[in-house]
Image (cartoon, rainbow, N blue to C red):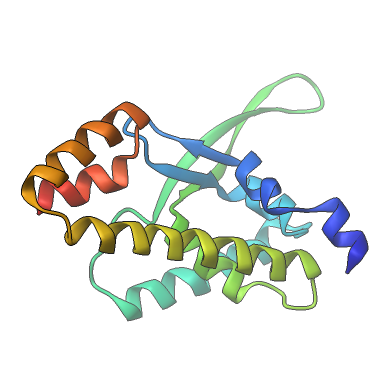
Length: 158
């Protein structure tokens, strides 16, 4: 386990995280595939499909957990081709690592990372709900400067 801790840390998952123009977090499936040490896309796609099924069975509120995209790549001969990839939300990444191969030690690290990050977000949103209207306005202004889109969505719906 010490070797895997030295090789992978929670920073590994932060390094492949992307932020969209609204401050929302997402990960590319192909990046996550590499980090979770899946060599074949077809095997990793099965894990993604299981996670999507779990998400669909748990809630009807689909917040664009998975968005299919086509990524350009250069082939060995220098030609450009497109491969299928996905933009993944934190929620679906959490379900992916829960359904990934448990014999891989990096999967346990991923499970911990996504569980902790999800819990941090839940705590922050719960704290927000308990604020007065004036405190919410102040907090929303502060978040706008930091670019935390998820809490801005919570503020807009409150």
